[in-house]
Length: 84
Image (cartoon, rainbow, N blue to C red; front, side, top):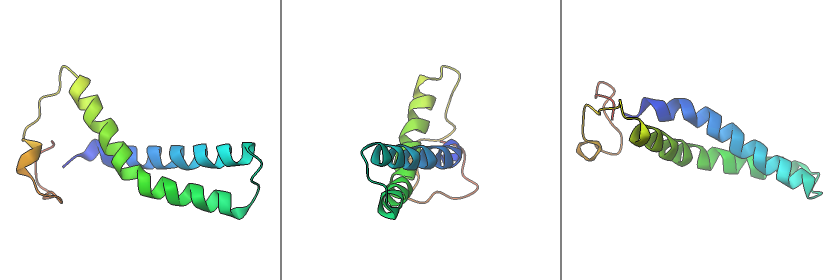
């Protein structure tokens, strides 16, 4: 279970949403659709980006030693599983 990515999901989702909304506003699209598209994109891209960021942080940390192999777990890990 990758607990770091759960915390990063909130941060990356709000960052993606904010970046898309600000880009849309700066291009002159002042409508509710700009905010809606940004919110949907932030919601859909939050988990994959946070998982990639989490894996990169763990790869670059010399003190990190995983307790389990990530390939041993299924798509949805057990809640009592060790951190990957």
